[in-house]
Length: 194
Image (cartoon, rainbow, N blue to C red; front, side, top):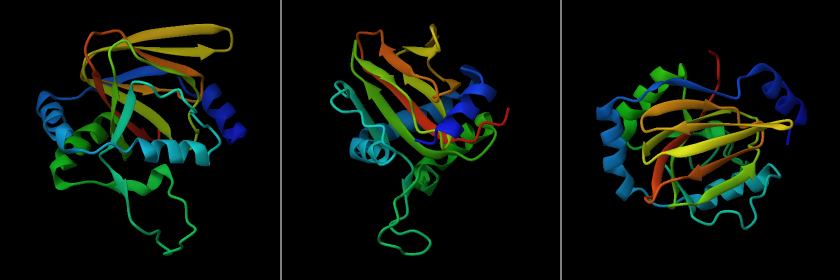
């Protein structure tokens, strides 16, 4: 993990910030496509392990489903090339309007957009994400408590449906589904510039 980049993001960026709200039409498009999107948790684990941030057995009740995907080969057709989050920019046409709506809210290009599910009462436990790109989350159904540690202090916010949140994933953080239903959210990467 790039510790210098991690320190820079911790110092310069807020812990979290509500960036705006996803419109109902875009939200419904994402919700309609979710049942047709296969699990891709293996991609998340592979990327995390590549950056030395293994989750281990901490993924009980959690899953991811890629909306954006990488090209089959790199621009150099190098068989040893390992895909980075910036390579995940391709999506089915059914997602184009929703991705455009997200990009207007975050103020730039969206990378590695995916669905994330968390079972009732489940916790995606404390972790730090690779600081290559910044993260956002938008709950589509249910609600969650996002907790983040800044040195000795823990801060939290309840994230309701359709709000798009920047989260400073360079700090240790976790997500808790406080509901009796599965929480469905959009996760994505971008370059925070607000």
